[in-house]
Image (cartoon, rainbow, N blue to C red; front, side, top):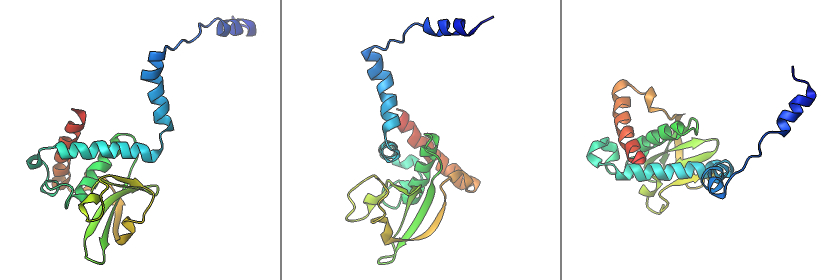
Amino acid sequence: MFGPSSAFLSIVSCPPLFITLRTFSTVVAPIIRALLMSNEEQLKKLAILFRAALIRCERNKLLITLQDFPHGSCGDASYLLAKYLEEQGCGKFEYVLGKRIADLYSHAWLEQKGIIIDITADQFEGQNCSVLVTSDKSWHSQFVEEERQVADFELFNHSASSDLRRSYNQVKNKIET
């Protein structure tokens, strides 16, 4: 039977934990950096990775709406990005579709808790940033919101979700290689 003194002795007699500098820099430091990285920074890093993979895909293996990426690709690209971000543990996103009154151009992007994630804004003249992850809504406010819904292509009919899943798998394969 253990008493208070024997429990204390077993704690005191535990060997000290030694972490080498190499272990710290390769294992512990990245974990600490990830914990300290803001949500916006994490989302931006993943969005940049996703966009780069999408660009590396063979165009003819993607949905026709993605073959001239980023031009005319905002809707489907947003749905694919939402799937990827969710799989990376970032949670659910909203798909937002807006229309610019001046020229009737439409545009789609993702939002989560006031943060905008947009990997196709550079299709518009005057927008040079290829990946926008921001809580600043000034650029997106030129689009009057027409639709907001859960960004999950798996909720679509079988044909549409299958087509999007095929393109998504193409992009994901480029991320993993």
